[in-house]
Amino acid sequence: MSKTVLMNTQGFTPVIDGVLRDTSASTALVFGMVWRFCQMDKGVCLASKNAIAKRLGVSVRHVMRHINILVDKGYIEDLTPAQRNHPHIYRDTGKAEYRPQVEPTNDGELVDEDNPHTAYGHVIMKSRIEDAIGNLDEYHELDYELNGAIQDKMDYYQTHSYRTSKDAKVAEEAFDKR
Image (cartoon, helix red, strand yellow):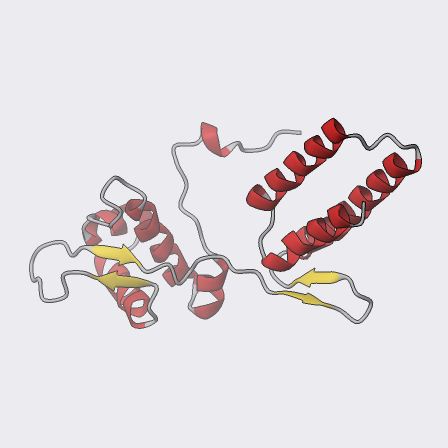
């Protein structure tokens, strides 16, 4: 089975789920293109509406309409609103940043509305860590060096994997139980 590896592509234009839910597919796609240009050295989109339209295969008028929606909804800021007959400069405001909503359910499991498998994965990870620490304690094999290795791994997961402070607490509680 083959799958696309993003490093092997000529780049990609994201469609952010939150923008898609709040606006439309067209607006989310225009946001993705503006966001993509904002990732360049200057941190802003300097591309003309014509350039954006050409890349998306739509009209300039279409791009203008959806950029106005994005500005009105606060996803991008027009840094040159008074400018006429020249490309505007747009800045990503950060409003589209991914912030999952993780809530405990009645049975104590965590559910992330946007990514349920992620939150569930953290619950599984907590269980596995608790089991491993319990086994090591039981056999008196939890020595200083191993304890440091576990702490290093927990620190790594905390800084690279957790999407919310609740997820980080899951791992911290497991480590504290040792």
